[in-house]
Image 1 (cartoon, rainbow, N blue to C red):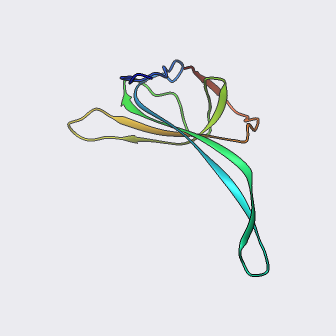
Image 2 (image 1 turned 30 degrees about the vertical axis):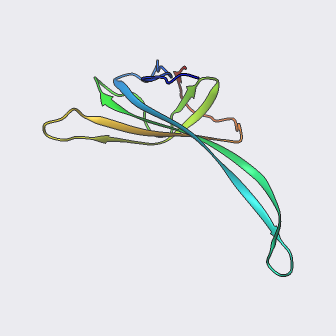
Length: 115
């Protein structure tokens, strides 16, 4: 396998921004059972959550807000939080966190982001 330079996931529909960084991650919730001595005897995955974090520069009017839905590839995510940073001598930047749990059906406004 060879090294890849730059963004592989491209974004369309997330208007007014230049996405400069995308981080995709996953996390499972695990339930544990213990015996009478407190020793863990069984563990089971009860839920799997996926997160996409995006960072970049604002280039116009950013249209996405917290609570919106976005699609990354074939997965639907809720925009859990979004922030804008303003510094006097720099471009405005944004940071957004998108989440999905257990392939749940998300309800809201949809913006498309495709890989």
